[in-house]
Length: 441
Image (cartoon, rainbow, N blue to C red):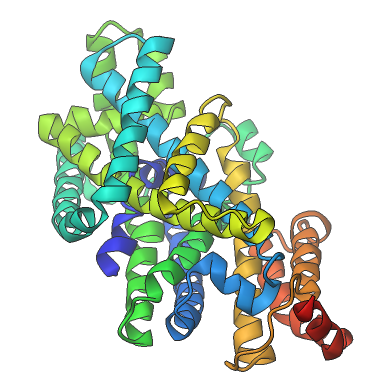
């Protein structure tokens, strides 16, 4: 389980996020925010994973029994599938950019179609027919990936001429006007920005902890895997992404200039483009770096496809009672992921993660409130729509993202506490008889 939770987050996207928040807030504040989210994410993942372990249900099916009802769970299935397929699309984009840099081919529609088509086909076949093989070798690929990351970090710092103290203590690298637009002027503003970005993927990981936690031997194992996954997600990958992109900027710029790019264009490509994360693997890791980059992305994309297929299965089952089989949803998940490429996903990625992070913490809070407070671990009737859960989600989300966002800028505080408090309250306000009548209908 820990190989999987750690493996799904040791990716190019997480390095990009690490570099992004480090360049916005400085490495020290970014790591402080990462440590905070590690604690929160681990507790959420353990809690939701524990409920899945006790019930034997995957995350989106779990919301049927605890919090949302049979049809009401469609909102959790839809938003989780939307988030996972979006992340998978972003991983594909960064892989494509890495291949372009590695093999130096033109960015044409034909090449895009070919590369994205081959990637999607690979994720479909590996998920449908090679999932057990991927799970078995995930420990090997993860260890190899970590060894490569350590090698790249040491090589980059050594070649930069910086001391380790300099590489690990840099401040914000963004212009003042950019920081102001992000609300990241003060130290607390920077900390808030980092937490709001990180909590989205931490919330998604909590739902994945449930998907994996149902197979656990004990609740303790769920907690350990949740902790390890969040430690890699919110601390190690931040440090690696930040240090590599900061200390390696000069070397990457020199590499681009040596290959015909102007100094100004090279600097912009490194400092402002997430493509440079994939390029760093090739420049600093060589052929081995490129191969391991592909292997690391493969294990993560297979797990993303697996989780998205579970969510899509639950969504279509709860809405239109369509059950064509898992393979159909493995294919559909990759088709949806490919459709994301039509838009400019990298441009709105930050807002996308923040909004869905608020929703994911709402879902986790309602699952925990239902299991530990309302039902107290008992099996209860399942309504078509559990209106207390749906209502608590809507109110908590609106309060967190629109009403109290200036007063409480770390939005998941409001969404999580709101869900934990409002859901039991709404359950008391709605007579139990009404829920039972809904279940019978």
